[in-house]
Image 1 (cartoon, each protein chain N blue to C red):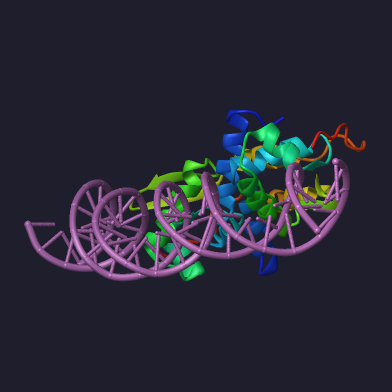
Image 2 (image 1 turned 180 degrees about the vertical axis):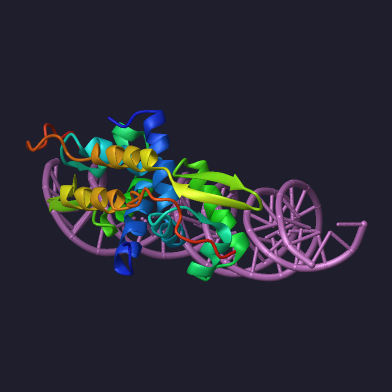
Length: 104
Length: 104
DNA sequence: TTTATACATCAAGAATTCATGATGGATCAA
DNA sequence: TTGATCCATCATGAATTCTTGATGTATAAA
């Protein structure tokens, strides 16, 4: 069951994935880590806009950052992707039986 | 890669899952189909509020509805859950290699 | 036919999210 | 030290989402 923290965590993770710009970012990161300026080039998006979306992804735990000199490299956190995959999978119906009761 | 329609579809499905009320609904439907009035009882939520969220879930294809007399029974669409599970899974990093180039 | 129930939908406002441009800190090169 | 680059963050407004209460339709019971 999705109770308490799981439900909130699932909502947060799904919200992070519920935006095309963020999905584009993740698609780029699938190829390997990237810094923000590379992403602005690849995605034709403004810097502050990408920073905003990167923060959403990072707060949700979906990406990791690694500062190096002037740059900050972002990479997918595969553990988090697997976590949300499992949470989503847990939504599948368990019973195939007909409804148990009707009280309306 | 998440290109075009897949990206939009993923965003829509994830958006549908990015709300605690809707996750609560799905959690109820895991036990079997339910009508709206049963959900209002179980979730302590107003009827128009549930109708709103049920519509979001239905538009995304995550639930199916079956009218019967005065009632409308909703049920999880397991195919859609599996679809989004696969789409989310496709976000996992493919390369483990170090970044290929730096041009900033 | 009248009344009650189940549900969708609408209208209005509150809350949240997103985009854009500006500002500032940190790092590095000159 | 000066200037340039990379990035986060802030401020503002636009857009979207969510909640609530009201209205309307269909079904079924009285």
